[in-house]
Figure 1 (tube, helix red, strand yellow):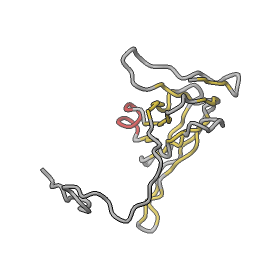
Figure 2 (cartoon, helix red, strand yellow):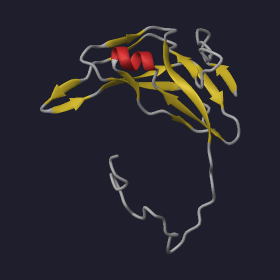
Figure 3 (cartoon, one colour):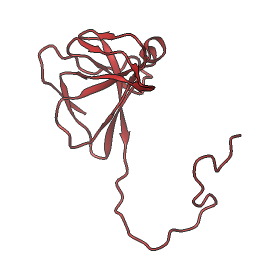
Length: 148
């Protein structure tokens, strides 16, 4: 995977350990993720885009998936929102962080904010048909396979 720094202060993604599946992504600038608030019985989830200062070129047949860091999730209620990177995207990677807590969260520059997973992706040709082959489940939806 090719990575370009778009800012002199950008940190390149790193794997936190030899067995890590994802690459840690870093904030390139200080960002405040506003608290969630309840208004008129509805929850407005606080969120912001955090720039990373990098762009990537994914290998053929792959897609990027940005996921939450477990420490931020458990300790601070900070989760990743939109998180897919198509192979042909060449712009800056920005991470949407959602703040599910009632307190503003400050992301410092150079802080680890998310994980980037590189996944194989299938892109089959579509074939229109009038009928699909049968399956055991059929059209059974939510909960149709049972709870236990």
